Image (tube, rainbow, N blue to C red; front, side, top):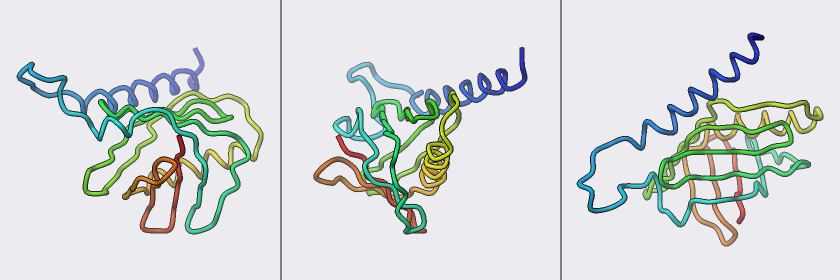
Length: 149
């Protein structure tokens, strides 16, 4: 086996732990248990706008984002592959995103640059709010992402 293949699977395993660990806990069996965020915020979105450090990034390749509100799982499909991670959208407007791994495939340089900008911006996100089309995410350094239904 090649070391890059092993490394990819290692990253997928880390992502699985990051997604499953926050969901573990005790319950009394009377309800399905707590969610990471409001269940209505979960589901599929499309990246409709991206700014990194206040500068707009052109979205040439579609990006699909799936948020699992119950367990905090994050799945992002780009032209370069699938990214896995975890997220939190707190009721007080605080937020956090972690991209922990995924799969990659050959992709055009522009798509690779777009994916890299997205991953960097997600790592700095610390706030969110609902918008008319979905969710807006922001960081203290001027990163902004709009996720639309």
